[in-house]
Amino acid sequence: MQSEIAMLTLDHIAIACTDLDTAAKALSDRLGVPLQPGGRHDRYGTHNRLLGLGDIYLELIALDPDAAPTGRPAWFGMDHFTGPARAANWICRTDDLRAAIAIAPVDPGTIVPLTRGDLHWRITVPDDGRLPLDGAMPTMIQWGDGVVLPATRLPDSGCRLLTWEVSHPQATLLREGLRLTDPRVVFVTGAMGLRATLQTPGGTVTL
View: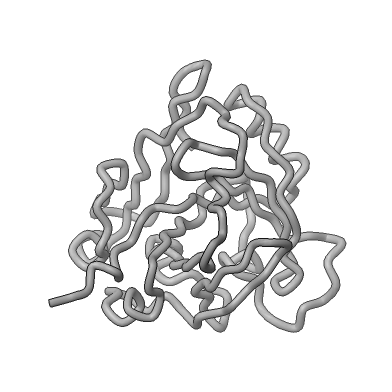
């Protein structure tokens, strides 16, 4: 019998963009709420802005033009990202990262330990930086012991995730293979695509 420790919980969704300041202003205007300052990820040369969605959060992420060369691929497929800002991946947390990887339907990548300020975590990152199943397969994360989860640190924006739609030709593999029970996550068999529908103070918005 598989351990309940390997269960997954939706932690946050990642929206990729090419210019963080421009995309943050456009997204704030669209949602009607300001995004919060994030930070830099020196290991992967990226930076972000954040938005609290209650029990989860939204991460707007881009390559940092001021980052020093890292000598490694960026995470979340950012080296290959072009076009307008859009949903790029989703991140699920677990209490036992190795156990979750062992039973995952698709290899999510290598476990990488990271630290920023008082946050410390371990996360799956493919060695070549390309997202498994083009982002349909979630990244897995295990926050360190005693860490206050980012979703609980962020101001409440008044926005909430209504649905997170994962469309992919192998949607059934993900639906049946991921140990995730969240009615907001919907798997659709079809062309690859990720879509977040949010309830905002001004109405429903789909990203």
